[in-house]
Image (cartoon, rainbow, N blue to C red; front, side, top):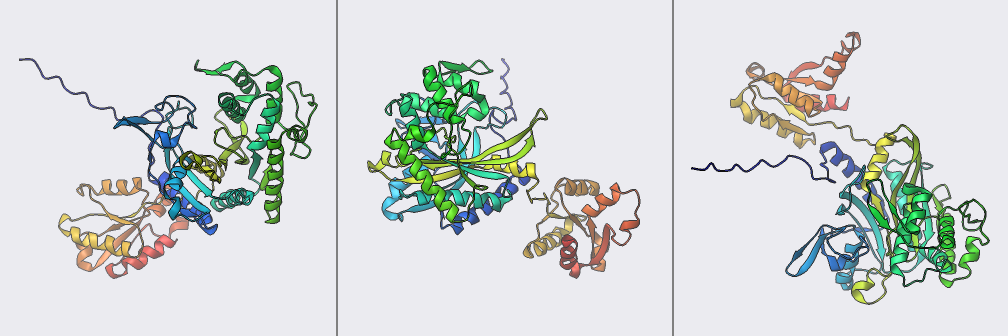
Length: 498
């Protein structure tokens, strides 16, 4: 008789491009998002939780910019329709507003926080699932909404611990770039070329001028051998676009330079004066600058910067980017600035896809994992990783007594749990408490129970004493002490406060 072939065990490993988040990571993220949500709430924004799954038709082809729906997003076919996990929180907002616009106020101000998924090639620091934190205003064309988004983002960064001087909100206008592209000979309806140009400029920090030049020209092959088709522009157009992406100063004194460093014949203002769209973009930038300055947000917090592009194709006006300016050390030990942690802008045509009517909108998206990494680099995260108080188990028959102790502590707002493993080896219980990061362990055997007392073991103090060569400084602070059962809560509170 043939042997039955055993089913191989599944591999216990995270899929490529994904990762697991444990207790402290989750707690730190929650604390940060709560701080941001408080700022958004102060500005009058309301929370929204939309579906993680959308139709591919609703998501559109803004990301990824490919023809097939199952590239760039995680998609599947169901009942002759394509569904996909959302790749950001903005496209779902457009669907939500179009679907519920008759029941929503205008303008509609909302914020959303949650995971998004992108079926892209993973790499160092690039994951296929990550968190975003968005805030958007839908239903007004006023640039005051764009200015408000920038001010709110500045307040949010400071609320989570990014000090003033360690960040800057950079603002540009897509209309300005459209004016430059028009003068460079790229027509408005050439969506393919414009899309390649936008994404190429947005990668300037990562690829450098040579990499962007290749993408603006014939194309570029990366280190892995993957080839990306270029925009196919001529040398003159490439020089103008690269010069625009690498300015020497602000819009009023803006000087464009070509590859050799020589000034081009035209300033940015002179270029934009040749096009109606470019001129409109400059006027909107002036309005935003006036509004934020009047509100007390100086150039140390919000600055006009014509080099900001943003890679997504749906932006139609002002675009924003939050850059952290403090230095960190990279994996090779070299100093560098931390870089961008948030971006956004105006997207007046996104809702129009559903309604057929223009619905102006503007918003910002914070890269949650990036901002958390920045706070860790600055030592600004307040989470100390403290675990619960552990009530040890000395007698199985007295489990109800131990649960009562834990319940008393929880009722007072103290994290507490009863050890639920095998209580036979007491040392293992303390090892468990240590692994949990517990500050205290509660001990009560039959002897203590008869006398109506408990033992409280200070695990934090015990660790300090173990590391110290002399016990002199700890004589008046015993790592383990006895108290009456009635005083358990008070003594635990007292020790935790230390």
